[in-house]
Amino acid sequence: SGNMEGLDAFHQQAFEILTSSRMAEAFDLDQEDPKLRERYGAGSPLYHGGPLRHLDQFVLARRLVEAGARCVTLSYGSWDWHTNNFGQARKQLPQLDQGVTALVQDLHDRGLDKDVTVLRWGEFGRTPRINKTGGRDHCGSLMSVLMAGGGLRVGQVIGASNSKGEVPVERPIGPLDILVMVYRHLGMDLNLQTINRAGRAIHLFDGGEIIPELV
Image (cartoon, rainbow, N blue to C red; front, side, top):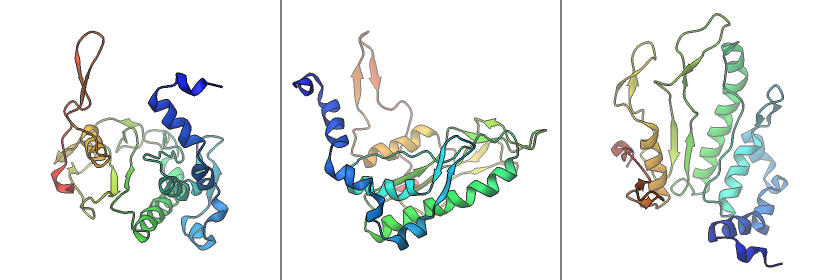
Protein backbone atom coordinates (compact mmCIF):
# COMPACT_ATOMS: atom_id res chain seq x y z
CA SER A 1 0.00 0.00 0.00
CA GLY A 2 3.01 2.28 0.30
CA ASN A 3 2.35 3.07 3.95
CA MET A 4 5.73 1.72 5.05
CA GLU A 5 7.56 4.29 2.93
CA GLY A 6 6.15 7.02 5.16
CA LEU A 7 7.62 5.54 8.34
CA ASP A 8 11.04 6.32 9.73
CA ALA A 9 13.66 3.64 10.25
CA PHE A 10 12.67 3.02 13.88
CA HIS A 11 9.01 2.49 13.04
CA GLN A 12 9.99 0.17 10.20
CA GLN A 13 12.21 -1.85 12.51
CA ALA A 14 9.44 -2.12 15.11
CA PHE A 15 6.96 -3.20 12.44
CA GLU A 16 9.36 -5.86 11.14
CA ILE A 17 9.80 -7.24 14.65
CA LEU A 18 6.06 -7.40 15.30
CA THR A 19 5.36 -9.14 12.01
CA SER A 20 8.33 -11.51 12.15
CA SER A 21 7.55 -15.23 12.05
CA ARG A 22 10.25 -15.73 14.68
CA MET A 23 8.36 -13.49 17.08
CA ALA A 24 5.11 -15.32 16.39
CA GLU A 25 6.83 -18.62 17.16
CA ALA A 26 8.31 -17.17 20.36
CA PHE A 27 4.80 -16.63 21.72
CA ASP A 28 3.95 -20.31 21.18
CA LEU A 29 4.86 -21.61 24.63
CA ASP A 30 3.61 -25.09 23.74
CA GLN A 31 6.99 -25.56 22.04
CA GLU A 32 8.71 -25.44 25.44
CA ASP A 33 9.75 -28.53 27.36
CA PRO A 34 6.96 -29.20 29.93
CA LYS A 35 9.56 -29.91 32.61
CA LEU A 36 11.16 -26.51 32.03
CA ARG A 37 7.80 -24.76 32.19
CA GLU A 38 7.16 -26.56 35.45
CA ARG A 39 10.39 -25.10 36.82
CA TYR A 40 9.15 -21.60 35.96
CA GLY A 41 5.77 -22.31 37.54
CA ALA A 42 2.27 -21.16 36.70
CA GLY A 43 1.60 -18.27 39.08
CA SER A 44 -1.85 -16.76 39.43
CA PRO A 45 -3.81 -15.35 36.47
CA LEU A 46 -4.86 -12.05 38.02
CA TYR A 47 -4.15 -9.88 41.02
CA HIS A 48 -7.52 -8.44 42.07
CA GLY A 49 -8.31 -7.93 38.40
CA GLY A 50 -5.08 -5.95 37.97
CA PRO A 51 -1.55 -6.77 36.76
CA LEU A 52 -0.82 -10.29 35.62
CA ARG A 53 0.96 -12.79 37.82
CA HIS A 54 1.62 -15.32 35.06
CA LEU A 55 5.04 -16.91 35.58
CA ASP A 56 4.90 -17.83 31.87
CA GLN A 57 5.99 -14.24 31.27
CA PHE A 58 9.50 -15.14 32.40
CA VAL A 59 9.99 -18.00 29.96
CA LEU A 60 8.36 -15.88 27.26
CA ALA A 61 10.94 -13.15 27.92
CA ARG A 62 13.74 -15.65 27.25
CA ARG A 63 12.05 -16.85 24.05
CA LEU A 64 11.67 -13.27 22.79
CA VAL A 65 15.37 -12.61 23.36
CA GLU A 66 16.24 -15.76 21.43
CA ALA A 67 13.95 -14.55 18.62
CA GLY A 68 15.92 -11.30 18.32
CA ALA A 69 14.32 -8.80 20.71
CA ARG A 70 16.97 -6.49 22.17
CA CYS A 71 14.92 -5.39 25.17
CA VAL A 72 12.04 -7.17 26.92
CA THR A 73 10.01 -5.64 29.74
CA LEU A 74 7.50 -7.53 31.84
CA SER A 75 5.31 -6.31 34.67
CA TYR A 76 4.60 -8.86 37.35
CA GLY A 77 1.92 -8.40 39.99
CA SER A 78 1.12 -5.31 42.02
CA TRP A 79 3.33 -3.99 44.82
CA ASP A 80 1.39 -0.97 46.06
CA TRP A 81 0.74 -2.54 49.44
CA HIS A 82 -0.70 0.27 51.54
CA THR A 83 -2.75 -2.40 53.35
CA ASN A 84 -2.18 -6.05 54.34
CA ASN A 85 1.54 -5.93 53.51
CA PHE A 86 2.42 -9.30 55.04
CA GLY A 87 -0.52 -11.15 53.52
CA GLN A 88 0.33 -9.80 50.07
CA ALA A 89 4.00 -10.64 50.48
CA ARG A 90 3.32 -14.27 51.42
CA LYS A 91 1.36 -14.72 48.19
CA GLN A 92 3.52 -12.82 45.76
CA LEU A 93 7.17 -12.95 46.84
CA PRO A 94 7.63 -16.75 46.53
CA GLN A 95 6.18 -16.65 43.01
CA LEU A 96 8.41 -13.76 41.96
CA ASP A 97 11.42 -15.55 43.42
CA GLN A 98 10.57 -18.69 41.45
CA GLY A 99 10.18 -16.82 38.16
CA VAL A 100 13.36 -14.77 38.45
CA THR A 101 15.42 -17.74 39.66
CA ALA A 102 14.18 -19.95 36.82
CA LEU A 103 14.94 -17.25 34.24
CA VAL A 104 18.48 -16.60 35.49
CA GLN A 105 19.24 -20.35 35.65
CA ASP A 106 17.71 -20.95 32.20
CA LEU A 107 19.80 -18.18 30.63
CA HIS A 108 22.92 -19.64 32.27
CA ASP A 109 22.12 -23.17 31.07
CA ARG A 110 21.75 -21.91 27.50
CA GLY A 111 24.98 -19.92 27.55
CA LEU A 112 23.10 -16.61 27.37
CA ASP A 113 24.15 -15.27 30.76
CA LYS A 114 26.95 -13.16 29.24
CA ASP A 115 24.65 -11.69 26.59
CA VAL A 116 21.49 -10.97 28.58
CA THR A 117 21.23 -8.60 31.52
CA VAL A 118 18.37 -9.29 33.92
CA LEU A 119 17.19 -6.24 35.85
CA ARG A 120 14.52 -6.52 38.57
CA TRP A 121 13.39 -3.25 40.11
CA GLY A 122 10.41 -0.97 40.69
CA GLU A 123 9.64 2.73 40.86
CA PHE A 124 10.69 3.24 44.48
CA GLY A 125 10.99 1.51 47.83
CA ARG A 126 8.51 1.07 50.65
CA THR A 127 8.59 2.65 54.07
CA PRO A 128 10.26 0.59 56.81
CA ARG A 129 7.34 1.39 59.12
CA ILE A 130 3.96 -0.33 59.01
CA ASN A 131 1.02 2.07 58.75
CA LYS A 132 -2.28 1.85 60.63
CA THR A 133 -3.82 -0.44 57.99
CA GLY A 134 -0.97 -2.93 58.12
CA GLY A 135 0.67 -1.71 54.92
CA ARG A 136 3.79 0.12 53.81
CA ASP A 137 3.69 3.43 51.98
CA HIS A 138 5.87 4.99 49.27
CA CYS A 139 9.56 5.59 50.07
CA GLY A 140 11.66 7.54 47.59
CA SER A 141 14.86 7.54 49.61
CA LEU A 142 15.72 3.83 49.43
CA MET A 143 15.01 0.82 47.23
CA SER A 144 16.74 -2.39 46.21
CA VAL A 145 17.69 -3.56 42.71
CA LEU A 146 18.64 -7.02 41.49
CA MET A 147 20.95 -7.44 38.48
CA ALA A 148 22.15 -10.69 36.93
CA GLY A 149 23.89 -11.86 33.78
CA GLY A 150 25.29 -9.44 31.23
CA GLY A 151 28.84 -10.53 31.99
CA LEU A 152 28.63 -8.59 35.25
CA ARG A 153 30.44 -9.55 38.44
CA VAL A 154 27.43 -10.94 40.26
CA GLY A 155 26.99 -12.72 43.59
CA GLN A 156 27.58 -9.61 45.68
CA VAL A 157 25.69 -6.96 47.62
CA ILE A 158 26.66 -3.35 46.91
CA GLY A 159 25.71 -0.65 49.41
CA ALA A 160 23.83 -0.73 52.70
CA SER A 161 21.08 1.16 54.50
CA ASN A 162 20.86 2.27 58.08
CA SER A 163 19.62 -0.25 60.65
CA LYS A 164 15.97 0.73 60.07
CA GLY A 165 16.10 0.51 56.27
CA GLU A 166 15.29 4.20 55.85
CA VAL A 167 18.20 5.73 53.90
CA PRO A 168 21.43 4.52 52.25
CA VAL A 169 24.50 4.96 54.43
CA GLU A 170 27.10 3.01 52.46
CA ARG A 171 27.89 3.19 48.73
CA PRO A 172 24.63 4.76 47.51
CA ILE A 173 23.79 4.04 43.87
CA GLY A 174 21.19 5.95 41.86
CA PRO A 175 18.80 4.84 39.09
CA LEU A 176 20.93 6.55 36.43
CA ASP A 177 23.92 4.46 37.49
CA ILE A 178 21.88 1.31 36.85
CA LEU A 179 20.79 2.62 33.44
CA VAL A 180 24.40 3.39 32.55
CA MET A 181 25.26 -0.27 33.14
CA VAL A 182 22.32 -1.46 31.01
CA TYR A 183 22.98 0.98 28.15
CA ARG A 184 26.69 0.16 28.27
CA HIS A 185 25.86 -3.50 27.73
CA LEU A 186 23.60 -2.53 24.81
CA GLY A 187 26.65 -0.90 23.20
CA MET A 188 25.33 2.64 23.41
CA ASP A 189 27.61 5.67 23.47
CA LEU A 190 27.38 6.96 27.04
CA ASN A 191 28.54 10.40 25.86
CA LEU A 192 25.76 10.66 23.28
CA GLN A 193 24.01 14.01 23.09
CA THR A 194 21.53 15.68 20.80
CA ILE A 195 20.46 19.27 20.20
CA ASN A 196 16.85 20.25 20.84
CA ARG A 197 14.93 22.91 18.91
CA ALA A 198 16.09 25.60 21.32
CA GLY A 199 19.71 24.79 20.50
CA ARG A 200 20.33 23.21 23.90
CA ALA A 201 22.47 20.10 24.20
CA ILE A 202 20.57 17.16 25.71
CA HIS A 203 22.75 14.39 27.11
CA LEU A 204 21.64 10.77 27.15
CA PHE A 205 22.89 10.59 30.73
CA ASP A 206 23.15 13.44 33.17
CA GLY A 207 25.05 12.28 36.23
CA GLY A 208 24.95 8.48 35.90
CA GLU A 209 28.24 6.61 36.30
CA ILE A 210 29.59 3.12 35.65
CA ILE A 211 29.43 0.92 38.76
CA PRO A 212 33.04 -0.34 39.00
CA GLU A 213 32.15 -3.23 41.33
CA LEU A 214 30.15 -4.84 38.51
CA VAL A 215 32.77 -4.70 35.75
